[in-house]
Length: 110
Ligand SMILES: [Zn+2]
Image (cartoon, rainbow, N blue to C red; front, side):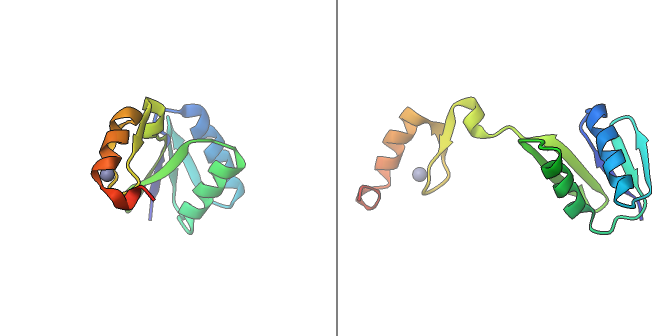
C-alpha cells in the first residue's frame, strides 16, 4: 500500500516531512515535492502532528483520494476581505452582509 503526500510544489516542506516521517518509522521516498510512503498506518494523524510540530500555520491536509494527501496552505475567505453569514453561509463583503443579515428577519436582531 503506497501513499503519496503532495506538498504542492514546496520541496523544502517535502524534505522536512520526509525526515519527520522516517523518524516516525515510515519507509519514505521523496520525488520533488512528493513524499511517498509504503506503510501508511495512521498517516493522517502523523501529518497533522507534523503540521502542528513545525508550526505550519494555515496549512491543511486534504485527502485527494484514498492514496493521496495534499498539504497546502488554504486561503480563507477572510484573507480576501470577505465574511460569511452566520445563518446561511452566504459569502460577501461586510457591507453587503449587513444588509443581507437583516433580510433574515427579526430573529437575528435579538
Ligand atoms: Zn444569510
